[in-house]
Amino acid sequence: MTEQAVGMVMALGRLPADQARSVLTRVSQRANITPGRAAGLLTAWAFSGELNLGIRIALEEAIRERRRPGRPPSPAE
Image (cartoon, rainbow, N blue to C red; front, side):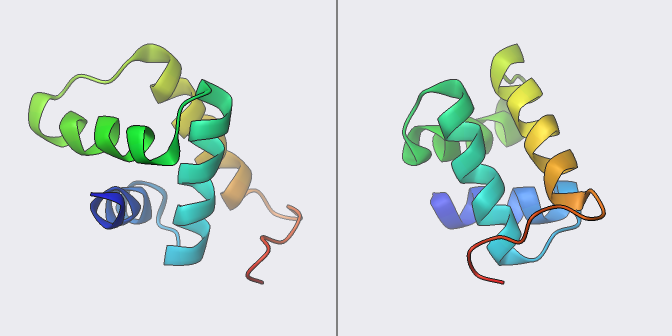
């Protein structure tokens, strides 16, 4: 399920896999849930079309941070 969520974040944010994983981790931190739970919510969103507003905001902010020029490098970079 985590890899499916990473793929979703890659597509949504037009990000490489390592940055998409960082986004997923950041979403889980902001929402105070485990990365596995965040992944589950994102993959469920693909089927239901519904995503908790807090998770949606955390996802949008984390993607924006990863795409921002001059952002700090991720640990994999």
